[in-house]
Amino acid sequence: MTFNFLLDDLNRSLSQKTIGTDKGLAKLGDSIVNLAYSMAKSIYLTRNNQNNRIIRTGNKVSKIILAEALKNAELKPFAKNRGDAHDMADTVEGIVAYVWLSNKMSLDEIIEVLWKSLSGDFSNRTQEIEIARNAFTVLLNVMKKFLPDH
Amino acid sequence: MTFNFLLDDLNRSLSQKTIGTDKGLAKLGDSIVNLAYSMAKSIYLTRNNQNNRIIRTGNKVSKIILAEALKNAELKPFAKNRGDAHDMADTVEGIVAYVWLSNKMSLDEIIEVLWKSLSGDFSNRTQEIEIARNAFTVLLNVMKKFLPDH
Image (cartoon, rainbow over all chains, first blue to last red; front, side, top):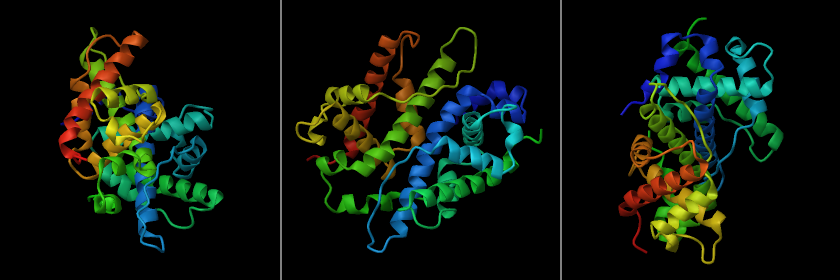
């Protein structure tokens, strides 16, 4: 089953701003982002610990991390003009939801891009923020080719 | 790609309580539950409004709703003994994560079971709680066959 009919109205007048400023798309994207990051982190920690332990974990990704990833990937034009960090995070969530709902990338593929972009030490909170910001920047760069030019 | 290696330790000593009381599994399940319900609600509202509007939305499913669904589906034995509503909600999240991670049901299938179980009026908050509780009860009943007997 495909859910891309949930994009029908957006696709009729598709632009960077329609994707990046749609409230409902951001809400859907919020849970996709959290699930994908929680899975990526669980996979990374399970594959990279000394004791062969299985580590399952979950995280809400902070708005600051997403906002910075948007800037790093040079996708600020998708966001509301003069938007704050919260608006820019919503834009990232909207982009992720758009790419997933339009079947350009599956959830598995999103998870894979994220976990392959993780590296370093998660026990240090400051470093985790940097790791996550980098992974979402990579993800947005991968997603660029599925997004409108203007 | 399959992520079921994240269940390797649980599968070695699988029981209702191992699935229902694992903190990490519940954390992963939290975002699956929220994503699946947000999608189900968006699909339902889009298909059932007078004006052919596309409605995208997102919701965090409340712990109370999940705890009641657990009781309704008679899956309380999976939860911690003398657990409160929060513990029982974690148990639902753990069950959903277990079924998804072990590839018994895809995310699409989970979404489909939920939205097909929705009915009634979402504009009334009390009724939405009842609708959601019913949908998660149906989902848990579908998932039962994938769960251990004791």
